[in-house]
Length: 313
Image (cartoon, rainbow, N blue to C red; front, side, top):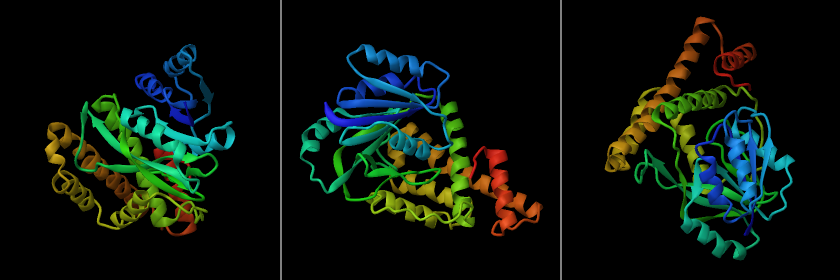
C-alpha cells in the first residue's frame, strides 16, 4: 500500500461508491468517506468493504454548502497519519496506468514537491470525450499539512502553503453514471453557485479575504485568470462564444453525438443558464431600486441569494 489517505465526499452515491472504493482501496493505506449524510445505500455499501480486508472509515458531517468547506473540515478535524492525502469524488477513479505511475514515482519524489497534479479524463454517456477541454490538469494530492481548498463556491482548487507541484503523465476519470435528466439538474445547482461566485466577484459580497497561498497549480491559476476575463464579457454572447471555442476550435465535434451533447450542456446551456441567473438578479435589483455596491444593496442581494438559491454568504 502507498502512504496515502484517500478522502471521498459523498451524498447519495450508491451507484458510484463501490466502483470508487474498489479502485482506491487497492493502493491507499487509509480511506475516509465524509458523508453528508446520505439517505440511500451509500453507507451500507461502503461498510461492506470493511469485510474485504480493507479499512474504510465513514464519518458523517452535515454538508456546509460547498465541497471546499466540507473537505477543509475533514483535513482539519480527522486523524490523517499518512504522508500524502488524495482527494477524489465518488464518481471518479484512477486509471491503472496512473496507479502504477504513483507506485513507481511517489517513494522517490523530492521533499520540495508538496502537490501532485493529474490529468482528468471525462467519460460522458460511456464515451471518452477526447476533445474540447481535455486534458484538464487538477491538483488532487498533497503532502499532509500542506494543502487545502481555496474558498470558492465553484471551480475550487487545492492550494499549497509551501513547495511546488508536479504533473504526472497518466489520467484519472470523471465518469458519472447518472442519466441526462439528473445531469442537467446537477448543473442547475452548479449554475446557482457559479452565478453567486460571479456576483461576489463583481460586488465583493463576502468582503476581501486574503489567503496565504503560494501555489495553486499552473492550469488552475490560468483558469481563474481566464474566468475573470470571461466574466467581464457581455452576457449570453460569452456563452455562445465559449461553445464555438470548445465545439469547433477545440475539436469537440470529432467526438460525435456524445461530444455535441457534452459541449452543448456544459459549454452553452449551462453557461447561458448562469447568465440568465445574473440577469434575473439585475432585473430584481433594478425593480427594487437597489445598488449592489452599496451596503444595503449588498445585504439585500445576499438575502436574495439565500432565499432563492439556498446559498448563505
